[in-house]
Amino acid sequence: MIIPLYIIDAFTSTRFRGNPAAVCPLDAWLDDAVMQNIAAENNLAETAFLVKQDDSWNLRWFTPTMEIELCGHATLASAFMLALEFPDKKEFRFHTLSGELTVTKSDELYTLDFPARALLGVQLNQLISACLGVDVLEVTRAGKTLIAELENEETVRNLVPDFANIKTLDCSGLIITARGDDCDFVSRFFAPRLGINEDPVTGSTHCGLIPYWQRRLEKKVMVARQLSPRGGELQCELKGDRVLIGGNAVLFMHGTIFLT
Image 1 (tube, one colour):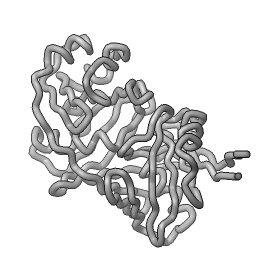
Image 2 (cartoon, helix red, strand yellow; image 1 turned 90 degrees about the horizontal axis):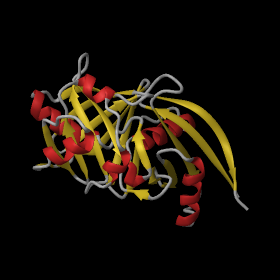
Image 3 (cartoon, helix red, strand yellow; image 1 turned 90 degrees about the vertical axis):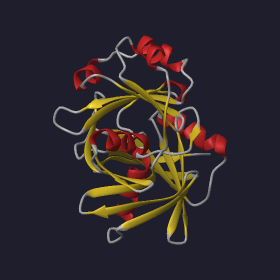
Image 4 (tube, helix red, strand yellow; image 1 turned 180 degrees about the vertical axis):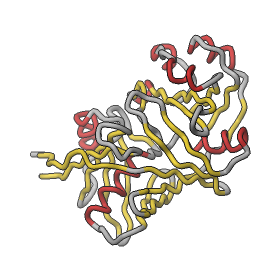
Protein backbone atom coordinates (compact mmCIF):
# COMPACT_ATOMS: atom_id res chain seq x y z
CA MET A 1 0.00 0.00 0.00
CA ILE A 2 1.26 3.47 -0.94
CA ILE A 3 0.08 6.52 1.02
CA PRO A 4 0.83 10.15 0.07
CA LEU A 5 2.58 12.18 2.75
CA TYR A 6 2.74 15.96 2.95
CA ILE A 7 4.69 17.92 5.55
CA ILE A 8 3.42 21.48 5.82
CA ASP A 9 4.62 24.34 8.03
CA ALA A 10 1.48 25.97 9.49
CA PHE A 11 0.92 29.45 10.95
CA THR A 12 3.81 30.83 8.95
CA SER A 13 4.60 31.95 5.42
CA THR A 14 8.30 31.11 5.87
CA ARG A 15 9.60 27.56 5.53
CA PHE A 16 11.24 26.12 8.68
CA ARG A 17 9.07 28.35 10.89
CA GLY A 18 5.62 27.82 12.39
CA ASN A 19 4.46 24.31 13.27
CA PRO A 20 5.12 21.37 10.93
CA ALA A 21 2.30 18.86 10.49
CA ALA A 22 2.15 15.68 8.46
CA VAL A 23 -0.97 15.13 6.35
CA CYS A 24 -1.94 11.74 4.90
CA PRO A 25 -4.97 11.53 2.57
CA LEU A 26 -6.51 8.04 2.62
CA ASP A 27 -9.11 6.17 0.59
CA ALA A 28 -10.37 4.52 3.80
CA TRP A 29 -9.30 4.39 7.43
CA LEU A 30 -6.32 2.26 8.32
CA ASP A 31 -6.23 0.32 11.58
CA ASP A 32 -5.75 2.72 14.50
CA ALA A 33 -2.49 0.99 15.43
CA VAL A 34 -1.11 1.58 11.93
CA MET A 35 -2.03 5.27 12.00
CA GLN A 36 -0.45 5.59 15.45
CA ASN A 37 2.74 3.92 14.17
CA ILE A 38 2.86 6.32 11.21
CA ALA A 39 2.47 9.29 13.57
CA ALA A 40 5.23 7.93 15.82
CA GLU A 41 7.48 7.40 12.79
CA ASN A 42 6.81 10.95 11.55
CA ASN A 43 7.66 12.20 15.07
CA LEU A 44 5.90 15.53 14.55
CA ALA A 45 3.49 17.11 17.01
CA GLU A 46 0.59 15.88 14.87
CA THR A 47 -0.10 13.71 11.86
CA ALA A 48 -3.50 14.28 10.25
CA PHE A 49 -5.38 11.55 8.36
CA LEU A 50 -8.16 12.44 5.92
CA VAL A 51 -10.90 10.37 4.26
CA LYS A 52 -13.20 12.07 1.75
CA GLN A 53 -16.96 12.00 2.40
CA ASP A 54 -19.06 13.56 -0.38
CA ASP A 55 -18.04 17.26 -0.42
CA SER A 56 -16.28 17.15 2.96
CA TRP A 57 -13.65 15.11 4.77
CA ASN A 58 -13.38 13.01 7.90
CA LEU A 59 -10.32 14.14 9.84
CA ARG A 60 -8.36 12.56 12.70
CA TRP A 61 -5.19 13.71 14.45
CA PHE A 62 -2.45 11.66 16.13
CA THR A 63 0.51 12.81 18.21
CA PRO A 64 3.50 10.43 18.40
CA THR A 65 1.81 8.73 21.37
CA MET A 66 -1.99 9.10 21.08
CA GLU A 67 -5.04 10.27 19.14
CA ILE A 68 -6.33 13.70 20.20
CA GLU A 69 -9.70 15.45 19.95
CA LEU A 70 -8.66 18.78 18.41
CA CYS A 71 -5.67 20.20 16.56
CA GLY A 72 -5.42 23.59 14.90
CA HIS A 73 -2.18 23.57 12.94
CA ALA A 74 -2.79 20.11 11.43
CA THR A 75 -6.30 21.22 10.39
CA LEU A 76 -4.83 24.29 8.70
CA ALA A 77 -2.22 22.04 7.06
CA SER A 78 -4.98 19.67 5.87
CA ALA A 79 -6.88 22.54 4.24
CA PHE A 80 -3.65 23.80 2.65
CA MET A 81 -2.99 20.34 1.18
CA LEU A 82 -6.55 20.11 -0.16
CA ALA A 83 -6.21 23.57 -1.73
CA LEU A 84 -3.30 22.20 -3.76
CA GLU A 85 -5.65 19.54 -5.15
CA PHE A 86 -8.71 21.81 -5.44
CA PRO A 87 -7.30 25.28 -6.22
CA ASP A 88 -10.72 26.84 -6.87
CA LYS A 89 -12.23 25.66 -3.59
CA LYS A 90 -12.53 28.32 -0.86
CA GLU A 91 -14.11 26.38 2.02
CA PHE A 92 -13.16 23.00 3.47
CA ARG A 93 -15.42 21.12 5.91
CA PHE A 94 -14.13 18.46 8.28
CA HIS A 95 -15.95 15.94 10.49
CA THR A 96 -13.94 15.40 13.67
CA LEU A 97 -14.12 14.27 17.29
CA SER A 98 -14.79 17.97 18.07
CA GLY A 99 -17.72 18.23 15.66
CA GLU A 100 -17.78 19.87 12.24
CA LEU A 101 -14.94 22.31 11.64
CA THR A 102 -14.50 24.60 8.65
CA VAL A 103 -11.52 26.32 7.13
CA THR A 104 -11.98 29.17 4.66
CA LYS A 105 -9.30 30.38 2.25
CA SER A 106 -8.90 34.03 1.24
CA ASP A 107 -5.82 34.62 -0.89
CA GLU A 108 -3.05 33.03 1.22
CA LEU A 109 -4.86 33.27 4.59
CA TYR A 110 -6.58 30.20 6.01
CA THR A 111 -9.13 30.82 8.78
CA LEU A 112 -10.21 28.06 11.15
CA ASP A 113 -13.71 28.17 12.66
CA PHE A 114 -13.32 26.36 16.01
CA PRO A 115 -15.38 26.09 19.22
CA ALA A 116 -14.51 28.56 21.98
CA ARG A 117 -13.64 26.94 25.29
CA ALA A 118 -15.39 27.87 28.50
CA LEU A 119 -13.07 29.37 31.12
CA LEU A 120 -13.00 28.43 34.80
CA GLY A 121 -10.89 30.32 37.33
CA VAL A 122 -8.90 27.99 39.62
CA GLN A 123 -6.84 28.64 42.75
CA LEU A 124 -3.57 27.19 41.53
CA ASN A 125 -1.29 30.24 41.45
CA GLN A 126 1.13 28.93 44.07
CA LEU A 127 1.29 25.46 42.54
CA ILE A 128 1.94 26.75 39.02
CA SER A 129 4.42 29.36 40.28
CA ALA A 130 6.38 26.62 42.03
CA CYS A 131 6.20 24.45 38.92
CA LEU A 132 7.48 27.23 36.61
CA GLY A 133 9.78 29.07 38.99
CA VAL A 134 8.20 32.47 38.19
CA ASP A 135 5.32 34.52 39.58
CA VAL A 136 1.90 33.75 38.09
CA LEU A 137 -0.77 36.45 37.93
CA GLU A 138 -3.80 34.22 37.25
CA VAL A 139 -4.57 30.58 36.47
CA THR A 140 -7.59 29.55 34.40
CA ARG A 141 -8.78 26.17 33.21
CA ALA A 142 -9.85 25.95 29.56
CA GLY A 143 -11.11 22.45 28.85
CA LYS A 144 -8.30 20.01 29.62
CA THR A 145 -5.59 22.70 29.58
CA LEU A 146 -4.46 25.28 32.12
CA ILE A 147 -3.72 28.91 31.20
CA ALA A 148 -1.19 30.72 33.40
CA GLU A 149 -0.83 34.47 32.86
CA LEU A 150 2.69 35.75 33.53
CA GLU A 151 3.95 39.27 34.13
CA ASN A 152 5.15 40.18 30.64
CA GLU A 153 6.29 38.93 27.23
CA GLU A 154 9.93 38.72 28.30
CA THR A 155 9.06 36.30 31.13
CA VAL A 156 7.14 34.07 28.71
CA ARG A 157 9.94 34.16 26.13
CA ASN A 158 12.77 33.40 28.58
CA LEU A 159 11.09 30.78 30.76
CA VAL A 160 12.98 27.47 30.87
CA PRO A 161 10.33 24.79 31.49
CA ASP A 162 10.81 21.79 33.75
CA PHE A 163 8.85 19.22 31.76
CA ALA A 164 8.99 16.61 34.52
CA ASN A 165 7.22 19.07 36.86
CA ILE A 166 4.69 20.10 34.21
CA LYS A 167 3.88 16.45 33.51
CA THR A 168 2.68 16.06 37.13
CA LEU A 169 -0.02 18.73 36.73
CA ASP A 170 -3.66 17.65 36.43
CA CYS A 171 -4.07 18.84 32.83
CA SER A 172 -3.29 17.72 29.30
CA GLY A 173 -1.09 20.78 28.78
CA LEU A 174 0.00 24.09 30.28
CA ILE A 175 -0.27 27.39 28.41
CA ILE A 176 1.78 30.36 29.60
CA THR A 177 0.73 33.75 28.28
CA ALA A 178 1.15 37.51 28.70
CA ARG A 179 0.27 40.78 27.02
CA GLY A 180 2.40 41.28 23.92
CA ASP A 181 4.88 44.09 23.36
CA ASP A 182 3.97 44.56 19.68
CA CYS A 183 0.94 42.27 19.41
CA ASP A 184 -2.10 41.70 21.63
CA PHE A 185 -0.86 38.61 23.47
CA VAL A 186 1.86 35.97 23.38
CA SER A 187 1.95 32.37 24.57
CA ARG A 188 3.86 29.10 24.77
CA PHE A 189 2.39 25.62 25.18
CA PHE A 190 3.86 22.63 27.02
CA ALA A 191 2.20 19.19 26.73
CA PRO A 192 4.60 16.46 27.90
CA ARG A 193 1.65 14.21 28.78
CA LEU A 194 0.75 14.17 25.06
CA GLY A 195 4.31 13.39 24.02
CA ILE A 196 4.93 17.04 23.02
CA ASN A 197 7.25 18.90 25.39
CA GLU A 198 6.74 22.27 23.64
CA ASP A 199 4.47 22.71 20.65
CA PRO A 200 5.80 25.29 18.16
CA VAL A 201 2.43 26.95 17.30
CA THR A 202 -0.86 25.63 18.66
CA GLY A 203 -4.16 26.59 17.09
CA SER A 204 -6.31 24.66 19.58
CA THR A 205 -4.93 26.47 22.66
CA HIS A 206 -6.32 29.68 21.18
CA CYS A 207 -9.83 28.26 21.66
CA GLY A 208 -9.24 29.26 25.29
CA LEU A 209 -6.72 32.06 24.84
CA ILE A 210 -8.99 34.14 22.59
CA PRO A 211 -11.90 34.27 25.12
CA TYR A 212 -9.37 34.84 27.92
CA TRP A 213 -7.73 37.84 26.26
CA GLN A 214 -11.00 39.21 24.91
CA ARG A 215 -12.09 39.49 28.54
CA ARG A 216 -8.79 41.05 29.60
CA LEU A 217 -8.30 43.44 26.66
CA GLU A 218 -11.99 44.02 25.77
CA LYS A 219 -11.18 43.37 22.11
CA LYS A 220 -12.75 40.78 19.83
CA VAL A 221 -10.15 40.96 17.04
CA MET A 222 -6.55 40.36 18.09
CA VAL A 223 -3.11 39.36 16.82
CA ALA A 224 -1.24 36.67 18.76
CA ARG A 225 2.26 35.24 18.65
CA GLN A 226 3.54 31.94 19.97
CA LEU A 227 7.08 32.36 21.25
CA SER A 228 8.53 28.91 20.65
CA PRO A 229 11.95 28.74 18.96
CA ARG A 230 10.20 28.31 15.57
CA GLY A 231 7.53 30.91 16.35
CA GLY A 232 4.29 31.74 14.58
CA GLU A 233 1.58 34.39 14.23
CA LEU A 234 -2.19 33.95 14.46
CA GLN A 235 -5.06 36.27 13.51
CA CYS A 236 -7.71 35.87 16.22
CA GLU A 237 -11.38 36.77 16.60
CA LEU A 238 -14.07 35.84 19.12
CA LYS A 239 -17.43 35.32 17.44
CA GLY A 240 -20.08 34.22 19.94
CA ASP A 241 -19.30 30.68 21.03
CA ARG A 242 -16.79 30.24 18.18
CA VAL A 243 -13.26 31.46 17.61
CA LEU A 244 -11.73 32.33 14.25
CA ILE A 245 -8.01 31.55 13.98
CA GLY A 246 -6.20 32.68 10.84
CA GLY A 247 -2.76 31.86 9.52
CA ASN A 248 -0.62 31.03 6.53
CA ALA A 249 1.11 27.80 5.56
CA VAL A 250 3.90 26.61 3.29
CA LEU A 251 4.69 23.19 1.79
CA PHE A 252 7.95 21.62 2.94
CA MET A 253 7.74 18.08 1.54
CA HIS A 254 5.58 15.78 -0.56
CA GLY A 255 6.54 12.12 -0.35
CA THR A 256 5.24 8.56 -0.09
CA ILE A 257 4.72 6.09 2.73
CA PHE A 258 5.16 2.42 1.79
CA LEU A 259 3.22 -0.18 3.78
CA THR A 260 3.43 -3.90 3.05
